Structure formats: structure tokens, C-alpha cells
Picture 1 (cartoon, helix red, strand yellow):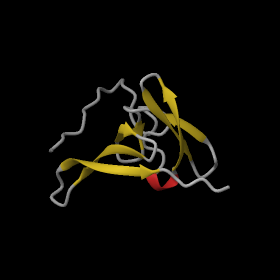
Picture 2: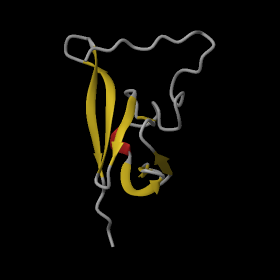
Picture 3: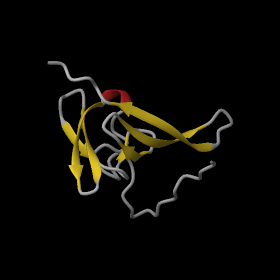
Picture 4: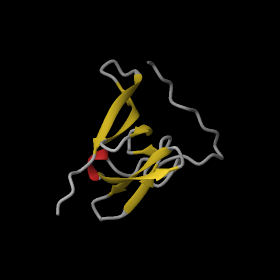
Length: 105
């Protein structure tokens, strides 16, 4: 799927954090998926960054530095699509996953 980056008017919010606290600020590798919580009829995921700050995310949350948006959360993984350039310089939607960390007891 080819994508065109969204154009924003000069008065709109843009840049890191424009779509939430995890948008554009951290690479996915800086986040650990440590748990889930039931929220209505779907799951919310608990992520922890390298400073042990916790984040609660749901499907639709923007995450990571490549315009990633969470599409699905299960007990074992978070699925998201990132908007990246392919080898030809075209904008594409690329699936990515964050897998749940095994608990250390």
C-alpha cells in the first residue's frame, strides 16, 4: 500500500508527541511490553521505557518514531503499522510487532 504523508496546516500540532506521549519520541526497541489490562471489550497494553516509565496504550495509539499506530493487542503481542520509505523512496505501511516480555520472578 502506497501512502502519502499527511499535510498539516501551519497552526496544527506537529512533531514528536503530536499524537500522544509515545509518538515520535522513542524507538520501539526502547519499549518493553510487560502486561495487559481489560478495557471494555478489548485489551490495553502496558509498556515500560528504559527509565521504567509506564505507558498504557490501546488500539489506535500512535507509537514510535516512524509514525506507528497500534492495530491490535493480544496477551502475547502488539501489532502496529509504521509509515516508512521503501527502497524506492515511496512511503509504505510496514507491519511491526512488540512481543510480551517473559516475567522474571
